[in-house]
Image (cartoon, rainbow, N blue to C red; front, side, top):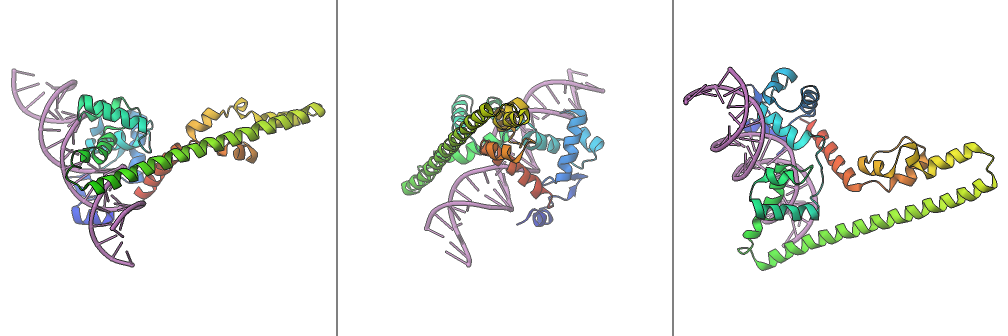
Length: 247
DNA sequence: AACTCCTCCAACCGCCTATCT
DNA sequence: AAGATAGGCGGTTGGAGGAGT
């Protein structure tokens, strides 16, 4: 059932007591982001008045905290984060917001959802057939194996690209030696071989997964060094934003 | 192909606490 | 001091979509 139809059935997306409910639209997100830019976080009940949003304060706060905050880390929970969640849950119980503080970029809602789907049922697994439980475990192990293999392939790709860069540097150095009277060519070499000197360091690319405004060759060289997780996360974010526009 | 099961995740609700008047 | 309001938190719901049967 689509959100639109659901809204008709359940009154979601409809205005109830002056407040809109249900999925947020891209336009509403924009208004909320603008509001936070101008007034900062807090005073959520003013949002409707100051930003023209027909949402109550609670809804606005939730949307911001769980979805719009720029420091949110998106994408899959890593094995390390999973360990932290298990450890802290064992220590603190269902104090999700406390646990979330130890995992920057993760929200209490996210952690709560993750724990419920992955660990809560483990307590019940005694009631399910051992075959089913084993199959589930196997699927999970296969997924983790695939993930590890993917990481390995990525590392190999990076190594291969590094080798190519080294080769290119060597060739350019030889060319430079034989023809060091051409400064423009040297400049070009520096731009290609040492992008960080132009302010486009690897870490910067890796962190933001953006394409530097350089030549096509630059893009080809550095393309494979992007943080794929980051891209996936951002793609999901874009996808979510895009889907909200449908309503 | 159709159905079921499972996971993910956005969003809501109700309760509690802190702060304000 | 007491009531009102806002914010924070944990629990719950239910649709989407992928995987398995």
